Length: 608
Ligand SMILES: *[C@@H]1O[C@H](CO)[C@@H](O)[C@H](O)[C@H]1NC(C)=O
Ligand SMILES: *[C@@H]1O[C@H](CO)[C@@H](O)[C@H](O)[C@H]1NC(C)=O
Ligand SMILES: *[C@@H]1O[C@H](CO)[C@@H](O)[C@H](O)[C@H]1NC(C)=O
Ligand SMILES: *[C@@H]1O[C@H](CO)[C@@H](O)[C@H](O)[C@H]1NC(C)=O
Ligand SMILES: *[C@@H]1O[C@H](CO)[C@@H](O)[C@H](O)[C@H]1NC(C)=O
Ligand SMILES: *[C@@H]1O[C@H](CO)[C@@H](O)[C@H](O)[C@H]1NC(C)=O
Ligand SMILES: *[C@@H]1O[C@H](CO)[C@@H](O)[C@H](O)[C@H]1NC(C)=O
Image (cartoon, rainbow, N blue to C red; front, side, top):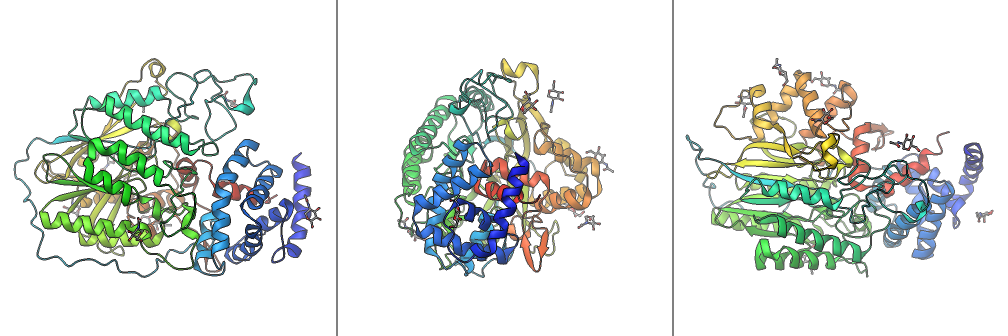
């Protein structure tokens, strides 16, 4: 079978030369076009026949890609057809709308194939009001009051079709469902009541976590998005709407504290689909904002709920009885895998005005002497955030660094942080001006299910401590009733390594000093690497040049232009493909099986 496939592929390669640039309308021709992509130039050349195909219509485009996926046996047929019929029309719309030789063509090559990446953002100065005077900061108390608690949960990815007894060891991205094409197959590994590392979270696991969360008596809870499970080739508007509604109801019934949520890239369909409001399409996602506007109003109030509806899912809400504003931003307009972002030749620095909304809200908070916590799904520093908006967000952070006293994200499924510097070429403790704290996931696909509990100083609203709470999926009692316990205590574990004084907060400078320790103390670094996935499914990271330095570099990159994930240059072109195993794994976990993976597999299958 494999031999046949290779022979077949070889013949199609020979045809490539006659095909590229001319008309490529059937699946074998398109497969050749895809296989011809080896660098940025060949990627841009390939967009020409793909554009011709797009002009034949969405159905012709999607059907051709489904056939390619099937012929090459890249995924199960239901995954090929479900995923490509959902994403194909967006890609075809892009190709019909742009000059493929321009910058947007380069960006599309990057998003779809990992070529033509640029680490250089388009120059743009975010309009920022000048400060009227110095921001009045609360003086650091010499005697700290008792901290209050805030719980951070993320990436619950609840699979409402999780079926106990179904196959947990399947051929798809997530298992533990009665998939139609598996009907009648003998079960080799029956799904258990509380979850499996190859499956998204059953409702039972989510309920168990929400009960554990409630037991911390937090002042409030933040949830940084991704409600919906990873069967992205099957999701529909009906399913996503009821998934969002059901989880809102479950949080409301199980948690007494107010909850401040954010929208994730899975909280739409197709996955990552958030069209710009300048795009004329029948596939808009106002229904997501309507659903969450209604579902969140109970916690965030009516003014913020109106904002969710009108500011594409973002809002600002004051925490009751506190001098603190939660600014929740829809980060999906800055996400490289939001394929709607590639449908215009005109550069749009601030899609849907999310950045200008942030500035407006931060200025209002500064004027009122309030502090702000920013919450969002996708952290700004990773390779999957577009360099432009990551840079522009950082400009806002530099301007409002005294007002923003916390930033909280999810999406990576890992327990991580990202430090912002006033000068990224001089990364020192003194220059560290902000930090994004990233919450681990509930879904067991990326290690043990976990959440974070913060101890917060009531005067400064800064973070005094973080405890990561986890349930050990390998523990025999897990399938009877998961036990949630402290996995590690950041102050206890990391404080002594940097000589943290007893009354100091976990400041950006603290996190910077910790990365210095990771450079020199491998035991400490390995502890961090194990913590990433809460001690389950740990990816080894011992090689200094290929893994350790990159990992440390990435914790120092609040802006995506500063991460170390681009590591293969070919003739001046950068290619994001040769990233370390754990980074590719992380990408797959965040996106599910995405379009990039399918295209990677198509081209990978060529390397005989
Ligand atoms: C695709 O088109 C080429 C050229 O028109 C033709 O030779 C080939 O048989 C077609 N293949 C399929 C699978 O339709
Ligand atoms: C899962 O399936 C693979 C391939 O069929 C097999 O090699 C593996 O042993 C199975 N694992 C379990 C836990 O059943
Ligand atoms: C669309 O986005 C622009 C910013 O790009 C914003 O000014 C405008 O208010 C938005 N319109 C709607 C209807 O959301
Ligand atoms: C989880 O439980 C397993 C089985 O009891 C044990 O071997 C493992 O060390 C535990 N993991 C953690 C992080 O406690
Ligand atoms: C970080 O390290 C520097 C240099 O050793 C030290 O001066 C500073 O006090 C440390 N800051 C924190 C917050 O640990
Ligand atoms: C290195 O880190 C380990 C683990 O945290 C710690 O026990 C040890 O004391 C550290 N070594 C030094 C020299 O600080
Ligand atoms: C990795 O970090 C070490 C310690 O700072 C440094 O000596 C080494 O040159 C770095 N390697 C790379 C490839 O950057």
